[in-house]
Amino acid sequence: TSLVTYRKSKVFSSPIPLPGMKSKTSNSFSPEWTFNRTLSNLIRKNILRFLDAERDISILKSTFKPGDVIHYIFDRQSTTNISENLYHLLPTVSPMKNQHYKQCAIVGNSGILLNSSCGREIDSHDFVIRCNLAPVEEYAADVGLRTSLVTMNPSVVQRAFQDLNSEEWVQRFVHRLQSLSGSVLWIPAFMAKGGEERVEWAIRLILLHTVNVRTAFPSLRLLHAVRGYWLTNHVQIKRPTTGLLMYTMATRFCDQIHLYGFWPFAHDPDGKSVKYHYYDKLTYHYTSGASPHTMPLEFRTLSALHRQGALRLHTGPCQ
Ligand code: CDP
Image (cartoon, rainbow, N blue to C red; front, side):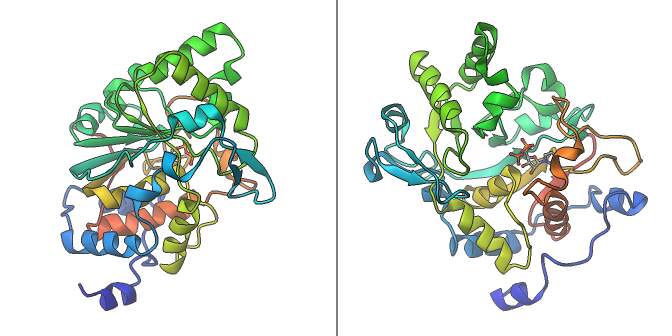
């Protein structure tokens, strides 16, 4: 496929059956999937024009000093500072430097994972990306246990760990961080104002308990670059979700990308209800109206890429 045909082929806008249209949807995720290396390489090359995940995955110690002022990406008029502690946890080189993997799994947080028995399959990938410190131990059979990289929006501290308002929650949080031993903890600390304290608490606990994680703080340009790439390809996303950010970055260091737990719909193709997250009580109201995310549009885009073999979406149960 030449770049020109790729551009013209409306890769991202091809009409695909919407989830809820029973048989067609289940058929579109049938086992006949074959990997399209040419398209996958082309996508990597095109994304590289907008961002280099090896570099943009984190700001580095060499480019900042404690006290430096940072403008939030979505709230440009508000600022924060690089604290001493945060500076301490900035990497000196990219945590993804020279890293390449054959098979990567990106695990989204949809309830579609419940009763999927996908845990073992997910863990069999060379690199496993998870989102927002989603719990694994209690759900291991469905989501697996291994984590190579996990994201943590500052709001997670509030939503999943009760703002660390008791010793018990602090312990739970520390336990979750300790269970990550050796993996990359990716904290988008400068996206939107409001999370400053939570980031600082998390960082302090990491330092205090000498938690063995490699922290990463996305570059200030990452989000615009990701959005720019998709907009250029006619995907009108308002603000990319964590899952789409991870896919876009993973193209840099993964050959084959497998997505699990991506299903932003309240029902499965058979009409059974699906939880918004596999592990909590958030509902779909969370994504409607006020939410800046356009998850269903992202899903349609990922489905189109699945059908062309550029990535593989797993939405049904595993063996
Ligand atoms: O940080 P964000 O709110 O985007 O993510 P999350 O709710 O922690 O879930 C992680 C990712 O899984 C999302 O960014 C979506 O890409 C995906 N997801 C999905 O496809 N369907 C759902 N019902 C929930 C999450």
